[in-house]
Image (tube, rainbow, N blue to C red):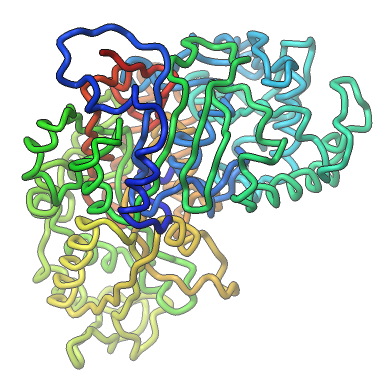
Length: 615
């Protein structure tokens, strides 16, 4: 998923301070941070600081690429609506069956039959989370694949030949061929989200079908499309999130009681939650901010944030914040960072399709310097789509080694050697054609290296990085015009498109956090870089990449790592995107009297049901 990610909100620091000051005083870190006792408190309100301009913007779990983000999925939806399988265990990047809605899947018939046994948890309306709820999800997904950010043609759910409830709690899938059980569990079953039948309707006044109904709307393709249309429309009405009866039917540990269009979200425990642990807090509140400096002003003065973050630009104030009663905990997630480029842009797409151009652009990213200067050391170089942090068994030596070192001078030489000449300070194609020393297929004589790049607003380090990128590009004869937008604006702006679409005018983008591997937890790349993949924003297409990706899905045993190595090595050198440093998702500041918030999830989940205060 698009990672840590910074969406839109506009609220003054003064307003945030006022909002944060409301609620239970038992939760305020200044009440007991200096106490030497550690008595566990029942109740209290924990306040969580959203990233700047990053409130939740979508509530229905079946999200399109324009709405999909870790904020929406793992800092909002997941509190109320749980995926079938839960990932992350004591800070480790692995599946957690104890907190999942079902037991471990059973593979049979040469790994072509998958049997899932649900545990029988309850929805908040008293109904059981059962196999019919999985059928509902699959029916909606099958009928609306173009609306699912994780859809890749030929993969899930296309690779599921049939599915059915064979018992109240038993769900069986038949697959089109044998797959690696690890890959299928981590990257395909991870996408399953049981949906309550209370949502199986095409209007608010429509009746709710029973589990045995033979004319429920989702049972036909047209009906499932109509249901999606209704639920999607309800998800666009942010002001009704806390009042719409649809979203009050939850199976997660929390339910929403208040939500503002600016992004303040108030949750209380779901008393019908079947999982463990049950929430100890009486209330959990997410607070929006307009900038990282606005958040820091509240963090360092009002003492009304329980779980916040220290902006990179304010690192010199770390000891001051510690003195206010906070623990400093950098948060790394299992992901990588990059800037997508639009291969389908009718004007500059042919330029981006030239590998030498992508190499030149990559040589303008001074990753070590950006990390040391702009990120103050809290970052890791990115050289391929396979993460190197947190420590994992997937990344090989190529993914840990720079392939295209920073060099604006070399970038300039690459362009000159391929038919470009400086004119008015900008490289212009003077030798069109596909020859070795020409600009490349589809690039027209007279075209210039003149690109637009939209990046996330509200983040000081992102502005510093993009300004440095722009400056380095100018040295190589590449003119980059920068503009800013909130996170949600950047991800909707940079969605995959076809050349004929008006929305295909975007050229380069940077939403600031790249990608984290969730709900595809195995870094095999089909969601991001397979041709036609739902999150392949730039519409990258390579037959070699497609073949290598396919190899990672069926290989097992010792061959599995070999297949993954072949894929990551190709992607490191072929540059489907422009790699940039992976930042720590945030430099968390957690109140000293708030416990259970660490270790932090490598998948960016927040689990306030684990949190509690002490005195």
